[in-house]
Length: 494
Ligand SMILES: [Fe+2]
Ligand SMILES: [Fe+2]
Image 1 (tube, rainbow, N blue to C red):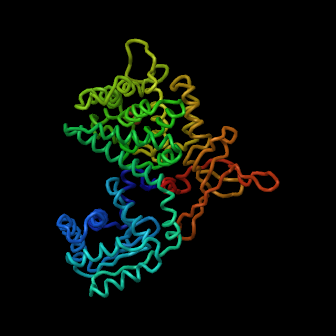
Image 2 (spheres, rainbow, N blue to C red):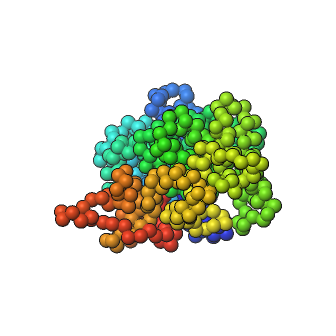
Image 3 (tube, rainbow, N blue to C red):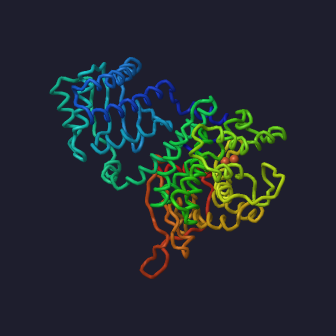
């Protein structure tokens, strides 16, 4: 997830080494988190004598004992918002996100920060451990001590439990409930990326692709956008290089939905627009990897192939079994998304036609996301401000000027995720644009402050706030390039 990793392939290979992440250990760690997540969930449904539990216990035991064999002793510990397995930070995959989040939340709520496995564990011990854990009272400071006593009374010496260490984390545990909407948004976001990935993989291997699932997720996104678009818009700052195609589709969908909402679309139309945006680049699944991931610019022939992706997307969609979920408006939207207002884009048309509304919306969202995302052939992408400036220059020719206006009012003069310097010499990240058009230049920002360890601190300030004399407390001086400041913007939105 780290933006700084999103550089060229050689850079990535070089960066992996210093971090020293042992990939086997990381795999086992991810596996452990997933298994513990499932086990905690299951044990909240069934009592400890239930037979269904047996299989999950066995699977978890296997992972734990493998780790014991390898490491001797191992600790799974929470530091801030991450899990560390024997001092190594575990990085979660898109698929693993739900498990990480669940375990992190459940442990934090109970103020448990670390579990150390000191020796082989059997079914009885693991059951005792899980049921004691889920029965702890939320927010109780003594939990770790109580847990430890409980284990002792049962003569269990192979597991040790320690309390959550950092105070910030504790405070956070109590505000977790308030953050529900953000949590739902994250879940929808990552689930959608996962589903898009699945759809594309299935299409590539000519298997059944579940478009209905995409539609359900788009419906959820529509609800979220209608309630508070800024949460989902914040997630578009996650520019995951490794998962570019999937991540990009979801971002384009979020921007498109937010525009559709401003235009007063019905929920039904919004859902159709959301799905169209999610599958707009589906045709790329038919383009050879060497062309898609080429680190240099494409030659003429390769460009020719690349330009076929809108048409290939249409073909793919029309061949889907669940064609009932798709209507002509969506198909045309996919076909149109690179045509451009003056029809100078692709595919080339034999006859003049107007670019469809869905096509025009997706095109704006698509260009903006593509420009602001690092790619293999462009290490440092444009800042949000630069991207908007380029798009404005090309309005009338490439974009629908009215829609572009809506888009800019949506992302603000300072789009969400922009790094800015304030007149107080503080650095800030634009968090939420002001909804009052008078204050387009006064968004809410997160002040970026890093302690000696380089850990981030969050303080959210509203730039419309004035002091006693009526002067603004803080104002934006200009935007900065986050890549030059080595700031991982996405971190602030998760
Ligand atoms: Fe495209
Ligand atoms: Fe695209």
